[in-house]
Amino acid sequence: MSDPLNGLSQLARQTLSHYEHNAEGFREGTRDHDVSQNIDALLRHIQVEAPLHILDVGCGPGRDLKRFAALGHVAVGLDGCKPFVEMARADSGCEVWLQDFLALDLPARRFDGIFANATLFHIPVQALPGALRQLQHSLKPGGVLLSSNPRGNDQAGWNVDRYAAYYQLETWQAFMRAAGFIEIEHYYRPTGLPRDQQPWLVSVWRSVFAKTFL
Image 1 (cartoon, rainbow, N blue to C red):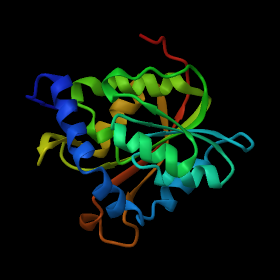
Image 2: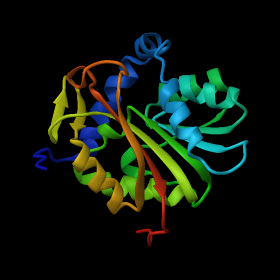
Image 3: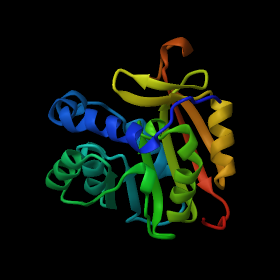
C-alpha cells in the first residue's frame, strides 16, 4: 500500500486540529448515531464476567463511553483531541486519557475489551503496526478488540483536512494478524443494505498471544 505523505506528526496535528475546531458540531452531529450493533458485537465475545474493563479508543465526546458505563462496565476513554477529552469526562464521568495515536502509552494487560469505532483509519499507514501492537499489549490474554473503519481499495491521503486510510478487508486482516490478533467475525454497515451502500467494515478480533513489545 503506497502512502506518499511524510511528516507523520504534522499530519496527525492537522487531523486533530480539524476536530478541535469542530468539536461542538461533531458532538451534535453524532450524538444520535446508533452503534449498538458494534457495542453488542464487542461485549458478546468477551469471555469473562462483568463488570468488564473497556478502553474506548478515539472516544470523541464520550457518547459510547457513557453507554459502556451505563451498562455497568469500567470504561476508560482515550482521544487526542483535548476538547473531546473534556467533553467525554464531563458527559460520562469516566476516566479519559489525552493521548496522540502516534505516541500511545498504554498499561499492559489492563483491558478485557477495546472499542475502536471509526477511529483507527486516521492513523497514518506507516504508524499503524506500532499502534496496533500497543493496543494488543494493553489487552488481557484473550481480550477482544472491535474496529470499525470506512472501507476502500487501500488508498490513503487527505479527506478535506483529515488524514484517512481506506482498507480492503484482506489488507486490514493482514495488519491485525501481524499485531497478534485472530479474527472472530466481520460485517458491513449499515445493515440491511446492498454491499455497495455499506461503507463501513467492522471486524472483531481476539488477542491470542503476547508479542514482545517494542
